[in-house]
Image 1 (spheres, rainbow, N blue to C red):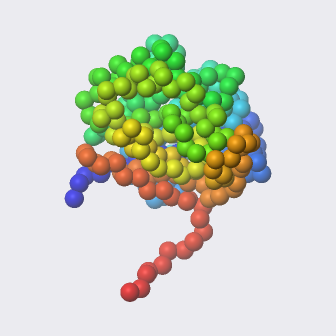
Image 2: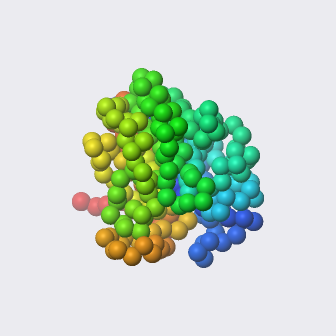
Length: 267
């Protein structure tokens, strides 16, 4: 049996000012439910990754509530920014999270069997992703330095996912990103992203990727619709249970407020 190291993947927590509601749901309450479930069932996880949109409007107060939620999680937390976040307010509330030389929230964490690289695709004033030359140069250097298989964590996908409204606000100019990974794709064992609020799995140019539902609201599966209206839908929120082996990346999805009972299947 291979040795697996367990981690948790969360995304798009979207906390709001004063712990209020969003689309008829309470993001803080739903995140606290996730944290409680993780602590109860996966306290042995070595860390939790959060792929952006930590808050909905970037309010300083919302980050304070986020910090309160995450302080009860019994493991280190590795967050990145999404389009709904404020880089300044995030850094004020999470001063220990590293930044690159240009102030972007980009950093490397050496895991047991992988190198995790966390990217910043936030651009103030727009909802689509931006990955400029400065960020791309940093990524290139990090990939070249990595001596273990790489896990990439970013908010915006760098490829179309077939939901037209979301493709419109994904990473728009992918050229700097593509130049950064050119010739090094084989080093990328998996790419984790957020932004889409749906469970999606696939490969792009040989690189496996995945994302999952938000802990709050979700995007309906409306494919190839030329309207740019984002259609919402309330489904069960999720977190991912990530098992990392030397040659394997395994992801289980947990609908953590699903009330269905366990039972034994007969023959």
